[in-house]
Length: 339
Image (tube, rainbow, N blue to C red; front, side, top):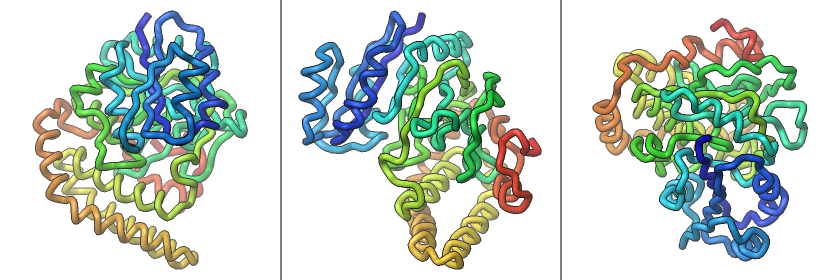
């Protein structure tokens, strides 16, 4: 059985650790370790972990490096072959690692996501990952079980283990050697979509992203940035553009980026029409920051494209517009998409 290094980044989240860490420690599996990556907490988190779980490793940092930086800095502490990045507000079934282990039997699988249900409403999928992530041809993300704000009830409709475009960073298992070779999480993203960027890079290098339906976790969600927050809107739009510029094939970059920007402009003006000026400004600021960083992004793109094995965009990028499917045609379920 493969070994898993479970890395949990935390910053002043003692309540989450008390509520969720015990379920992780009760995992039934012969080969795993837990690493708490502490981003300079001041709420007694480290002391509580040391007192209650002395066998857990603690990687202590001198500042709050966020999700990307905290996880990247914790990787050198990991001794197992599979890294498992787990949010501190995730509850797990005690047999969850067995399904993930099985998914890695395919040597070409670089990363895997478990089924992600809501900790508040366990009969429903959870927004951040649901039954696995996809993007449309313009780079807008969605999931099996969640399209924009419409979240489906879990009725076994996505129990097949199929290839994904992206695996949620709330519970992301990835081969350590490939994670390190790929450069890890891009810390310029700060929050949101860093896992999509990582999974895209891994696919461009010829690897698969998998799904383990018999591995189940329950995610609380909304801890870092609440739903509808203008700051969340900003990061989602900005980081999506960062990701597209870095990873699109040359053909897609020429054909699709302009239309994607036009779609963003429509979204911004819709927010203004709906009486949400802060969201309008968040989208505008995202595009300004994208243009401001274009030089740095272009250098990253050059380096990544030189490493590229797959010349076309991944087949898991669905050849449709999720904007059209959802807002024009009213489709709210992944299973109803014309794909």
